[in-house]
Image (cartoon, rainbow, N blue to C red):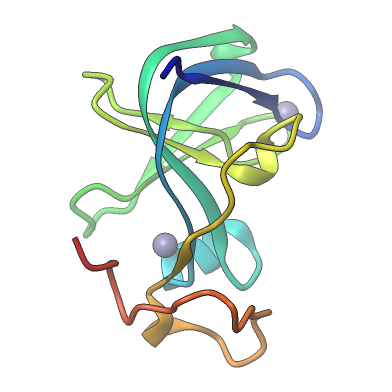
Length: 138
Ligand SMILES: [Zn+2]
Ligand SMILES: [Zn+2]
């Protein structure tokens, strides 16, 4: 199957990207880091194995923040408007795309909620989706 193309960008429009690849999973994450970095109840992330990834514009505006005590957790954002943007592993093993940064509807739909144990009581929910306490079962 040919990889789907994901294109999107930030709120101010300075940063635009295009990533192709196959979606591995699509999850809502309720962990406290996602709460803080998104400013809302959860992050909604498409996780894929990228085939190609390119910044169409604004690469020089990208900011990044690695949580000091986290193994991997890092945020990528537009330094002009603060919008979350995709995190692409340097070795292209994985890409995490904040679904809200897309300029189109992805074909995939969310499969579940992770870090349900950290979920804020006020966060929106969808009882149709399974919720896992931390990571989903392999
Ligand atoms: Zn921006
Ligand atoms: Zn999270």
